[in-house]
Image (cartoon, rainbow, N blue to C red; front, side, top):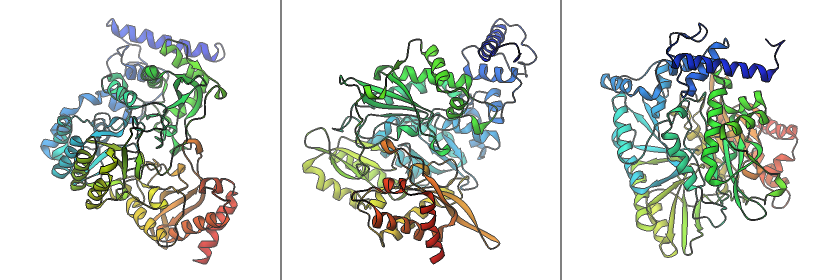
Length: 583
């Protein structure tokens, strides 16, 4: 056929035949042998099944996860979770994957338990809900919750018998874990200071909330080829890291002062890509509709034969950006609005330290207070205490950030000292040095079966060691991630550390690959690999050597990012090699 028809003609014919098969099934007619593999005919509205049928008709072999989704919709399997719970059993095989559709992750062998991930649109949670999560974590989990890099919460150490109960308890306090794992749109992020930030261009809260509820009530959006991330950044002082998402909605103003969302696509920094600039603008009221069109094209066209190439990035690589946008426009049903960069005003610059400490809000006499939790982890008593602080001194609201911390908002000027004292009484902090402010760590091998190193413990030890020896006067981000999934986004950090096993004699020890020079927001840049497989006990002096070289050789006011960007990779390698030789 390839010698007779053009590529466009081939694609048209493939789509036509898929439609024919769907219509045959709708009228009760037998499917062609290539389509019928013992599964019922696809409903034309079942985008996942239609895409699977087409893959099979074209000679592709579905991966095991697609076969499992095809056999029975993951959203219809709660009875299986209940049955296992009644027997005190955890899932096995592909059931581990399917259980993630309810936000339940079986994390053995790291922990013989579930982790439950929530969905908190825009990271904004009511104090009574925060207290409720604390109660659930204490009664059904390990007595703590972790704040994540998607402005979310995770509860850990949940027993097999408690799985249904934890999902039901979350629902009773107005929260959900539905679709928080597996091949779904993950927690929708937004600007942490939305609605209270004098710098922002737009309040993202209505849009992240609308996107959240749109997803929850569209069954077809649970049939993606792989996971999917969406973020709304309103241009405020705290970056939402929207450029690291599959869909980036970044607020911009044109020269007439009208506010739009600029569309970026295909961000996946663990694979070395930020969201690609599309030149497309969308009115804020139409952002959810446009996102739906993008998702529907991805569901139809994403790869279902290779999990390693099933993210949106790889569809963009295969098709090219313009072909993808043409398909989105056809689904959208209206012409996409295009704009050249020079037609837009420069976006406001984020403040890398605005998520820590006391900061004035746009509301006169009000403040937000950024609270630090070691490793992003809060005990149940600390969570209840923060909820009380928010109720006593603020607006009974807590805001989670992508930097693994929480904000208490709407604190009156006169109440700031009392709020700070109450936070300190919980064993939490609102001030930190430049290194501790920018420290981010994933769960690590204490709670993740993929991780090679104990990232949270190492992060604490590393920052303690460094702060005793150096005091940078400008923010420095150090991110520790345990595996290639890059939950802590090591490639966008000034210094990024990727967990690795390091040979030492006949044994192996925990260590890291060292990356330098990553950045985010207006300074988006992927870090460079400088040294592989450094044992953790040898790592702190290497990081110190890099920081010392920056502080010694930088131009006045030069950030670590800018300094490292003008260094040749060989220079950075030599700094580390000299330190290793000295050690």
